[in-house]
Amino acid sequence: MSRIKIRAQQADGVTEVKALMRHPMETGMRKDQSGEAIPAHFITEVAVFHGERAVMQGYWGAAVSANPFLGVRFKGGAAGDTVKVTWVDNQGGTGEGETTIR
Amino acid sequence: MMKLTDSTGLSRRRILGWSAMLGAAMSLPTRVWAWVRPEAAFVATGLDQALAELGGTPTVHDGIQFTTPDIAENGAVVPIRIEVDPAALPNVSKVSVLVEMNPNPMAAVFDIAPDTEVYIETRVKVAQTCNLYAVVEADGQLFMQSRETKVTLGGCGG
Image (tube, rainbow over all chains, first blue to last red; front, side):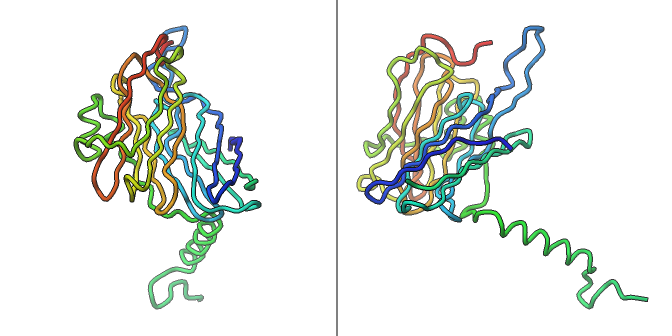
């Protein structure tokens, strides 16, 4: 499981979540130096949770940049609440990050 | 001999297996929606085809704020932001990002929980100078906003 860097900050009833994931996001269309195709390897699903509630669920293609950044906002959320971001990739890899709202 | 099957025909092992699975599922955060990836849109190789898979041709809507750089020096990392004003366009349930000239224009889809903010920031690859589209679904209808980004160095090199 890969770790996600995550921050969550609350102001005026809106929480902003910023997450930075480590992932190559290979398209499957590139070749290495010996001309061999580099297999596609990218995050396919990402989700943001406020406590137990999913506030956003995303589906990604290989066109999302390597080491993806995701910023989302949701209503509600108080200082100290848990925010979690998770991902799954096309090779069965997973990532997770958790923080408390500041 | 011990009876392994009860009156409902379920073996003890299967019931134990189910309770273990249920326990594992309950320890995970709740998912509001089922995972349904619009795979046909992701594998589409043209913008029109991808839009058709999403449900048709969207209407331009000014309630969508789509921010992209005018010029991207590095097409591999192009920051984008989509924000929807709920007063102008309420009940948004989905936000998609498409890059017209990419081999597969569909880049990302976001399912948004009801009654929350519609605000997404991310970075995408843009193969060459072209239009980027933010497509939003609200009450079953598609709306969009598009922006052109000039790319100095393509995003699919190597």
